[in-house]
Length: 256
Image (cartoon, rainbow, N blue to C red):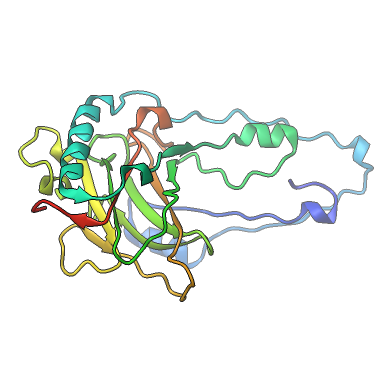
């Protein structure tokens, strides 16, 4: 809200840049970003000022979808549940994080952020991260399905809203579903990564370190991101992606 009053001058702008065609030029750009911000205070009365029209924004990419991998994802979940002990009632639902910047502009309300280059999902497990528990996150690798250039899942400390652990499509997701669903035609399109307090050299496991000491076990949320469709600068439409699933466990029953 860049209005004419002092309360209108507080803004936050984040520039996210990735996939440089020329890495050297990209590094040069980041070392000296050519951005200038000017504050212009008009001398006219508010009633005489006509706002600029809201521009038509490019829509997110609509095209293929991941529904063809839903059966494989269901089978992966069943295989995992056979091998872990825990209370299924403690599982949680992943929901899309969708914002409507056009409505914020039209109604002059505050938007937390606008990120048209990414599709976000969020999951609030509703369960403390106890020392004996772990969380297995499964889903489709959006890069392998052809609907993103990069994909990641991050765990956030609810108290501080800062990430404490994460994994991504570049370093972690590939082949991770093989441990539970080997020799399936779509296993390479899936991932299965475990968050634990101590991994003890377990494969496809991410250790979580909550920094401060607490009277109760830490409470957290998970967020996944599918960044930029390969055919454009926007992300895939959120309904074309399969959301991640979060499985709560307390002990391993099988061999996996």
